Amino acid sequence: MWVQPKDHQIVGNYLATIRRQAGVTQDELAAQLGKPQSFVSAYESGQRRVDILELMIILKALGADPKTTLAALIDHGGVHLKASKLAVFNKSDQTDDDG
Image (cartoon, helix red, strand yellow):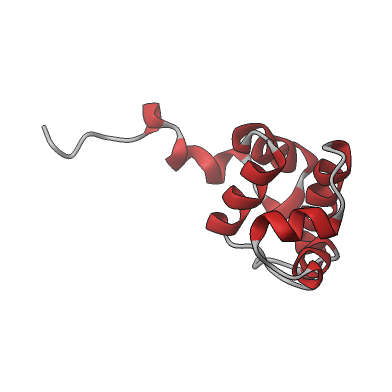
């Protein structure tokens, strides 16, 4: 299973919600990011993908916590993430190759 268009819409909708809750317009956020308003509109509508580095910059501009945001997306069921697929991010599940 690969990333579906609806997954991009879920992420975009969630980012739009965070932006609105922060009381920021698309124009204001775009200016903070040094991007045109169409950039914000495109990812909020799911027409454009946001990579992890862009996501971090967007969240920082909105004053949002990345851990909280990712947890909310996972809990929502977006991007088909399940706890078993995230186990590699849990340090207790990783082995120490150095010793």
